[in-house]
Length: 327
Image (cartoon, rainbow, N blue to C red; front, side, top):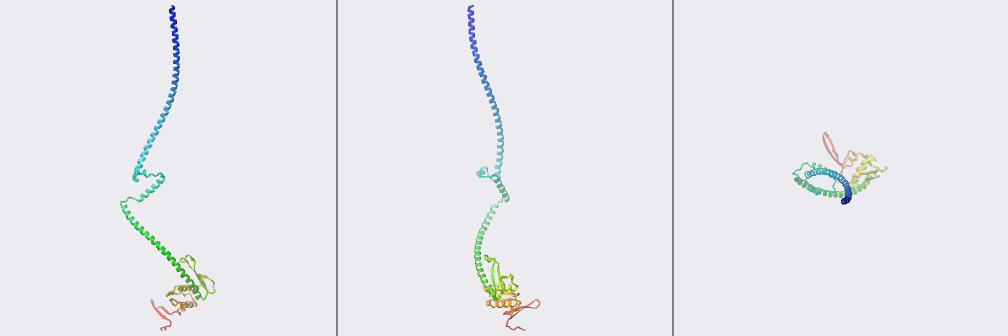
């Protein structure tokens, strides 16, 4: 019985040690289980975060795919437009893309290019259909143009030469006119005084700077009157002043023959006498006078008269003064 008790105590003592060891292992396992639970929870949370990241990545992938799809669509449209522009470039301008690329301008402005293109199109449209004879016609027109250009150059040279001659001639004319006019002015005053038995007269130019285009001013002062413009004189005084001017011109530039047509019609007998007497001073000039004044006829050397003894039949009579008049 003692042996049995001893074996029983030994059994319980071994069991307590085993139980203690089992408790210890249990605690270690529970601790490991708690740590595993903590790792599991951490992994679960990390898994949730990864799931959220996955969902976000899936959303971003979907958006990227949509953007890529839209980009592909736009790229397809752009490629179609590019092909259409290439075809249009070749059809309208006979240029390939490579050739056009070489002509690219970095400073090109689209709005200006569109406007210029429209203008060029209008000009090309105005040219009409292409003519196969255009080259030959161009040669002919070019030859004609060169000929006319040479003629134009010759004409321009001739014009320059003529302008030079005109300028020289104008200078010579002005010098000669000045010389002649000064002589007429001097003789006019002398003739006026001789015809009017006194007084004074003056010739002048309204615009001395342009003598060839200027009008001539005539001022006369018959004896006993004040100096005034010729338009303010009486009819007889105007006639005598004009006759004085005529005689002044004849003195400056004598002429061998002169015809006077009723220049003294407005003069009275005394002025006709002065006029006729003054004619005799021009010994180197032969005068033919058309007149109805008897006082003038008295100073003539030869008279010619026209009569009409029958209707429509004229007869000329001549008479040299000093000859006997036929009865």
